[in-house]
Length: 218
Image (cartoon, rainbow, N blue to C red; front, side, top):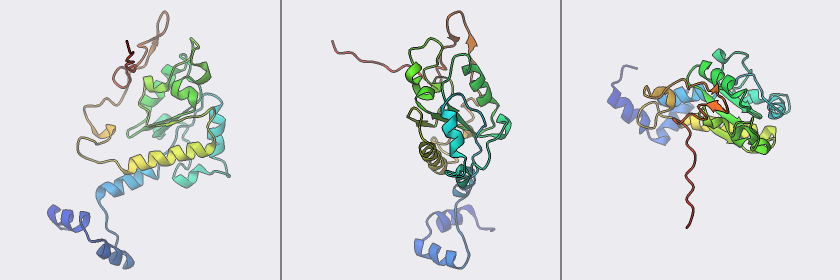
């Protein structure tokens, strides 16, 4: 305490590992503010309590005693988007439900994350050719982790949760690669699609999703 910033830069970020180990034996823990900040966030992720289709059954099983998602800091699923920072899109997203999903996402406080669980949430799954099914929730909101499968098992959701924790732990508070919620130029809310004559309007959020360019050989 009371040391200047330059000393902290040299004394903590570049501290010899042997010295760090000896200090830890004496009960002195040294770290960076960034590491402490990310450690607290990655171990207190609260999912939003809602499900869309059969993948939600696997999501519910993940919270039961056999798998116990609470071990990873997701102690309780919050009933309100105002209290949650993780949206698990578990199941088929119909075009009738898509505006509600985006609205719930907008109501969640930053920093917030999204896991797309199952083939339906990622690409429409077996209902991809249906006129009423959205071909991936990432057309309207940013997805951090995708879980393939139909449906994926609880172990897959736990793996995705651990992957998200790893991504949170590697985030930087400053710099060009800082997360979305620390970049003032990035919008915190996304447009909610409306029902048009034939499809959702707009059909996708062009800021986060663009159709892939297919190069065909002549």
